[in-house]
Image (cartoon, rainbow, N blue to C red; front, top):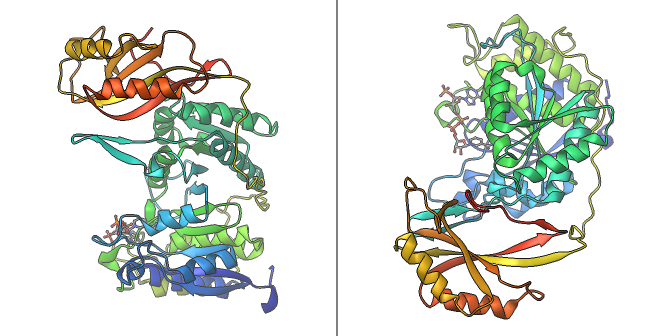
Length: 487
Ligand code: NAP
């Protein structure tokens, strides 16, 4: 056992959180103490109580200071009470500390019966945690049309792909699956496909594959045992990691880690379960398994293994389990379950996968702005998004007339990605939101600031526009997608 003197104890911020948080946190701390984990806890507040105290982020400065100081946090579920603040305190913490990697192990647990029991499911979903649609940049474009910006950076893809490989190596795994929607979203999801494949190929000891993410969802249900490490963008990873948790017993037993360059936060996947809070009914397994991940993160491998084995033995034997996972009529309270796990410390389960864990070696990333150098840039046109109730033929004619005599020609008008001018399909449903694509008739000079301003004035004289996008080419390749039907 790695039993360290008190002076070498690792300081960990403990955020009990809301609802059942206090009960599952207490249970976890008791098991870790009994297992000889060298941890000194710093209790900190976040969630509903913080919101009620008027802290709009749901995370007081003292909590942020504690996380910064310790670099490691164990967190219970946090509620965003209705009427307090707009943003979840969970998302805030992930963003403030740039915890860009969300790690969700998906492993069959003994004694937890599911339709997939016996299949040997044992993989990890690595989800990008700070970019994508969850950057939360949303605008109503018209009173009835909403838009969210899906922001994906090459650096973000590189970081998450490197983390997936580092995790695979640390856990002795052999394959990384890059799952994306690159077939449709060529620029955004395509970036993770290209960069992910490039990164994984640098690790010859790892097999790699690309899978379209919807097929990945299908494969996870049909043949989940084929997966080892799967890496995905934020929203795909959010959805598929919950699906994956469902294969092995659900959110109540699913652990997770949020990893960044300087801070790591471990948490159960489930929420605050307010209906059972304070009733000694909560199952602490998910937070306990998160704490096992935390112990490995801080290098306490022996203590992690002791807790994991005791938990597995308890589940395997099926005595004194909480009601959510016990055989009907045999459920006990949180405290009795914890007593049983503690009593089983020191016993070994043959069901724990034999794996040589090593610390995850996370690549160091520069603090300076990440910039991708280019050898050439061209500006070839401008997309203007506008609100109009006109029929496409009339809209097209008016836009053509607006740019007559300017350096631009109107190439097309589309409605939610479907061309409606000059060619339209009879079935396209129209709303009041259009994109007009203007191309430079002759190569643009520099940033063509004056020409674009003049174009906006011309279009704006007749139509309400809300958003402009430059059409660029980087290193000779189009940096924009074409519309359906666009030549
Ligand atoms: P939830 O809290 O996960 O609870 C859903 C149901 O799952 C519970 O009612 C309970 O079922 C069962 N359950 C969850 N965890 C359990 C455990 N440890 N032991 C036993 N049963 C457990 O989901 P929710 O009701 O959608 O969310 C409640 C609040 O939590 C919301 O405010 C939400 O925003 C927040 N939340 C926070 C996090 C986080 O902090 N990471 C994550 C998700 C949700 P029974 O009722 O059948 O007993």
